[in-house]
Image (cartoon, rainbow, N blue to C red; front, side):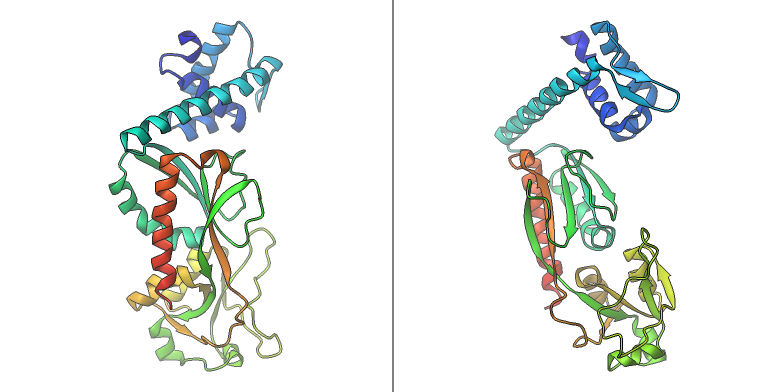
Amino acid sequence: MNDLFGDGGGSALLAFVRTAHDGSFAKAAERLGISASGVAKAVQRIETRLGRRLFARTTRSLSLTETGAVLLVHAERILEAVEATEAALAQAAGSPRGALRISAAPGIGRAVLLPALGEFVRRWPDIRLDVVFESRTVDLVADGYDLALRTGEAADSSLRGRRLGDDAPLFVAAPSYLVEKGIPKKISDLAGHACVRYRNPTSGRVQPWPVDASAAAVPATICYNDPEAIRLAAIAGQGIALVAACEACASIERGDLQSVLADALPHDRRLPVWLLWPADRQALPKVRVFVDFVAGVFERALGQRH
């Protein structure tokens, strides 16, 4: 059995499972933080031990052989058991530990989550964080994530989650811009202002603002395909932007941004903010402490605008 696992305990088995999911030694190596040749050698050690090929290799891709498919089922169970055992031991010792891979929506992730993570790693130095900012809705299990931070209704009923609060959009601009161009008093005033808009990177369309189209022809003076870029553009004085309140709250508190047209937006535009995780991660101490920590972060962030 030691020969099957390799010198690093379960490291060879983990390299095999990661390669099977990612379909590439290079991608698996990136996830595991080792070299591609190291992953390939780990898989080769298992093949040598079993005397069978685990992958059908071509110059462009890897695919599981029948033996590989059988091993994958059992290997995943073994690794899950190892993780559960480590979690139980960590809980008994009172020290959450291990790796957490987190998917976060870019705007809310960079504006609220990122600034708080330094405090998290100081509190729990034995937890390693791997945070990915991405707009797409990930499959937590298939893509290998422990948690996801998202806005909007949670559609996957197989996931567990904690509602961190409700968010709403705000019109904001830099104080320097408003001194120069004036403060808009009503939606129709936007026609005379520079407006920073969001262009959906998938559809290529400029996202509409939730205002009565007949009230103003809202210009798209400058467009970005990233929510954080829109907030930074507003801070830089490029115009009026529509951003999520929790993304803007720290900038407003510092005086970098000022809210305008506060009564002009519909009151039904609030969106829930969720932290989601697979059901089998529920009992892991590292997940529980992260969820509790992030809940506190968002309680403070969302509470600052009331």
